[in-house]
Length: 411
Image 1 (cartoon, rainbow, N blue to C red):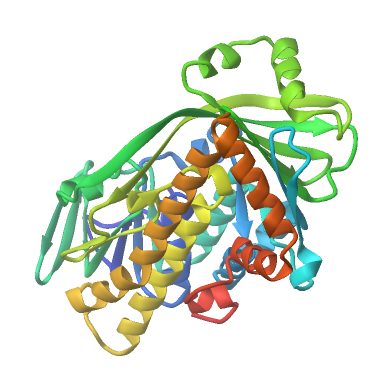
Image 2: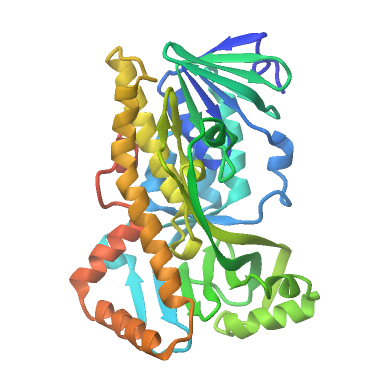
């Protein structure tokens, strides 16, 4: 912890963000860059969070999300480490019918970018350290939180206190901020596990993202910088432990059966990770002087790679609502201001939960009638350019009522 981030016994701020991960950190950059005093409290040691073993995932950043990253001062650090997604290919197992998205059909911008999570964390750490009005308290934990009509006060585990007009819970699926506010959560498990690893391959990937739907779940091959790809292999939860326990040669052989040989010889680079798959949503995303964002508000199946993008849209919308209220001289933690955020984000979030849940249930099976229906559906979309263009623009994240940051405008 630097001298600048070491607060006095009580620190006053406009906003307290609980959780300094990808969504909470991005939100802090947006608010801090707009001149607001922000305190971020995060349980993770900053150095540990930057290590390769902390998080082996890579995230698909849609074009609209990339615009936000540029707008909050992160893109300069991320761009050299980002692999553009120029084509998307979707196939149902070994069926000859498939769907192909070419970015050139809707302009000259990529659909988005693949970036390793540890690179995003590094960019966030650098940007937050450069913002003098953002105090990043980590590792630290909130031991108690009082939210009154006049403001909020958090007591940290080490005895320090933070007073703010608004508290934002961005502390993930198991959000203690959410549970402390007695906000109910609806959740369900898919009985699936995502096995994640990075592979180096003999041939270039051509910046093509591939998603194959197999009976156990989707198998995604996502381009990274260099001749590398990130794999998200969805497997039945009861089989995943045995796969994770395989030796290197046996694991590579199982991988090759699903991956194929179109990129030549494969080599797993670094460790493997596994994550149980589930979905959930909070009964409300606002309460007295409290707003939830990212996985604390809703968490979805990774089938379409939209999880982080959904959280980024939360961050962009919440930042816009709060900054605009501040400029008008309003109480940023008032119910009226927070209701604007709730109305803006709730419908979009619930639709995305329903879509990803439905896609996973439709494609993660081997029922002949369903296979025929979905293959015909893929073929119909492939043969209907207007429908394809709408879906491609959706993949870019440029449809709907977008916050200014996601349109490439200043906050």
